[in-house]
Length: 308
Length: 258
Image 1 (cartoon, each protein chain N blue to C red):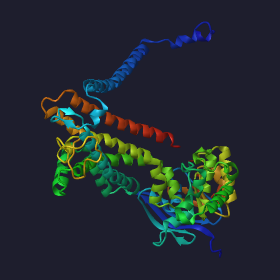
Image 2 (cartoon, rainbow over the protein chains, first blue to last red):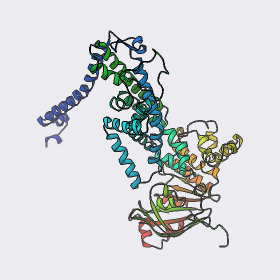
Image 3 (cartoon, rainbow over the protein chains, first blue to last red):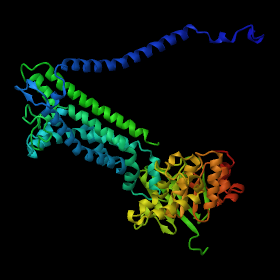
């Protein structure tokens, strides 16, 4: 080997020259990276297209007035106040029902339950409930709440149907948040003689509440967007209420809803000005996106205050 | 031999299963009151499992089946009238990884008191006294008295571990179980915790699980060697290290397996 004869006989860099095989690997690496990047970019395209197209089409009608006016001229003019208010009612009531049940059930499953046939059945039920199509939930709501429980088609029946639909997701996300609390916190508690409830109350919940609430808030956007479950159970084509009236609906009233309104305008009413359904869609979309954004901001804020 | 509490913990024929796996086999052990007893043995030999039996915390980790007898202060802890809460107050545990809760130093120390008393029974002055005496006892008062409101996780690891010990003290425990309390600490931290153990000795019975044979030798009065769920040998520490009776013990302490 001549390399031993002296430093000048062979430059050390000679060992690091690219071979053809190395070049080939580098080309593949670049290609792989490019493909993954393009796919990631593709994700943004539909969102941007949808939003800009909707906003462009809705532009002639979008105004604050549009939100607070009631529909007129057989839905061909005016605003969307009854639908907006109806959606708020439906979503809030469904959350008021689903949140405590879902969160408490998740606490039981994660903190108390041992692996047993019972917990396996409950977990199986949760998973399957989450996979049930919304139209099936609608039929269940129709049978159980509207007919059997005698609520009739009403905000109450529709909200309960939405609640059933969101429950499994709330349970799943709550369980995940609870499970993310380090076990060492629980151990610390147990070993000074805390009961399970004291452990939950003092250690588990304070450290998982941000995740739990985020999961709950995300369900707002889901139930606001659903049409099928409320169509059979409480949402109607048209309901006359006062412009800007916040307390227009009672629990057993039927109501309008944004998603339903959009469906009606686009398929059931002839000669609707084009901007009207697009305006409704924009309001629905902005509501949903801003609730999502809110939950993200909320989570980031609480995370930054967490010390572990 | 006539002392009423010669032994803090006594087990007789203790067997324990996790499902089908038998983790403890016929363990009979007497832990002397007020001394430091160390449990040594290779990983998976059941040291930690045994430790977790003494306040029945095992049962919180999943399904275990236990057979045999465990007496703490001569009371069988499997008796039906036993309160697990009172038992765990009397038998506290310190972990490998310091686990202060993400609340203030002050609240960590009074945490146990808050759990076991109605709000109306607790007066600020009493709590203050409890915090000062517990932190003084573990040698943390001087460094923390001006920052009691700070989050406990801002302390150094060694201080966190001392805090975890201080957290047990207001409950006036009989036994402190330590599960490799120094394995996350550096040399100085280890020394500090060991010195603290010496200061606590006498008032509390201390049981320490350790992988570090030198540590067992330094800190403990009596030493228990375990292997595959069985108690192989239990002798005064010096005797166990200088003159082990069982060849398996000799092999282990000489490092022929580990």
